[in-house]
Image 1 (cartoon, rainbow, N blue to C red):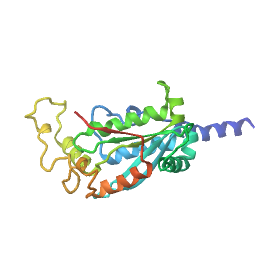
Image 2: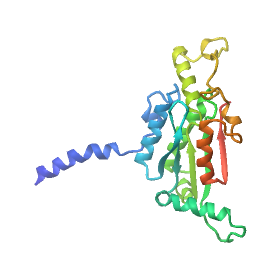
Image 3: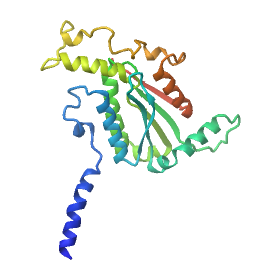
Image 4: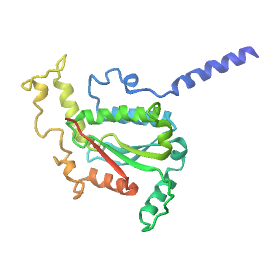
Amino acid sequence: MKHWKLLLVVFLLPISLGAQLLSPEEYFSDYTTAFRPHHRVIDYVRQVAEESPRVLWREYGQSEQGRPLGVAIISSPENIDRWKEIRDRHITALMDPDPPADDNRPVIVWLSHGVHGNEPAATESALINLYKLAEAKGYGLDTGLDNTIIILDPCLNPDGFDRYVHFYRSVKAQYPQIHRATTEHQEPWPHGRVNHYHFDLNRDWLWQTQKESRHRLAEFLDWRPHVHVDFHEM
């Protein structure tokens, strides 16, 4: 009997060790010291969604070059279980000219990261934001998520982001260089700011001429968030 118990522990130990929420620093050995390509960004977001009951990954389309576009939906586990119901109730209430005064619907917050691909810290910051929200430790996050749904888009412009990251990784020196004349600061045309068709997606919210914008706006209007935060890099 003892031998069976020992075998059971041996088989279950890898499962229990694997089911843990890793920070970006633990998942990537070079987080904060290097940029990673878009597919690795998405790998991490999916990993967090698999391990955290507070996170759901939802793809809403693909970029012009076929990279996934998606959002991480973050809230309490109870809200995640009924996110569609909450979203539909929110949209219905928005259309009500006389909503009830005691309405306690969760606040919907949308976080947009990295519309300009050559501002990579915007997308890199999405990873630590996602981890801290999924971990929900401190700052009242554990109870705050009971009343909030956060929609986090890690990279609005994956084609431009990868264009810049591949350029930088191919020319960077052993140590970061601050001088503007160095190669890593001489990004070649068409630059990573724009998408596949060299369009600045930050100018396309209204016109929706680009594939990425049309996919994103469809998802955005499905939620109609109360708050929208747009992360760039300065």
